[in-house]
Amino acid sequence: MRYLYSTMPVNKEHIFDSGIYFITFTNYNWIPLFHITNGYDIVYKWFDTLKAAGHSVLGYVIMSNHVHALIGYKSSTRSINTLVGSGKRFMAYDIVERIQKAGNSLLLKTLEEGVKPSEKRRGKLHEVFKDSFDIKLCRTYKFVQQKLDYIHSNPVSKKWSLAADPTLYEHCSAKFYTTGTQGVYNVAHANDWIFENWIELPTE
Image 1: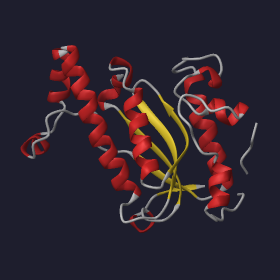
Image 2: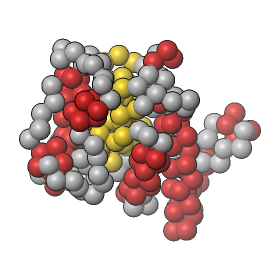
Image 3: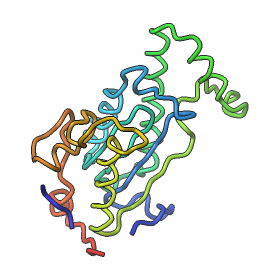
Image 4: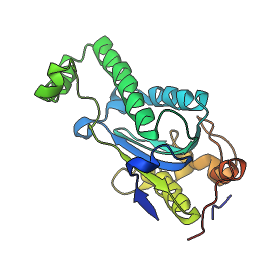
């Protein structure tokens, strides 16, 4: 296994800073929309968009109703907040389209009813994700490792019990960090990204 050597909430002055960010977003009411629509590839498509913009995916897990990811962000005119927000919007379109094609009117109605009146007035039709999402800037090697461990332990936690071992869960980067072999989606190793981008992180 290749090991990595605190986090604080991201304030406005940090959202344009290059660095490693831990990101979490969740489906509306924890509905397992990725499972229902087999929409894991929708998240991978967003990862591709990040890569095309010069950023890197360093670790991830896509659960049935939420996503954790470790993103190597290179400072640009679009903040990390904007990248996640716009990504959620386009993922929501694809998820709703699949639900419509499946003819799941009951689920569509649930997502429609979740839209707040103020957002309806702005033209929003479905509530696919929780409005808020979590972004934290990783300020130390220790925190990067903690978040990778947390990401990779998700599928084997008692709450989810989706696999006996993290490397056996398909939609996760655990296999790469444990064996060196890429899984379903290719990620960059966090150590390599830090070295290549001259990011200085204290060990503690």
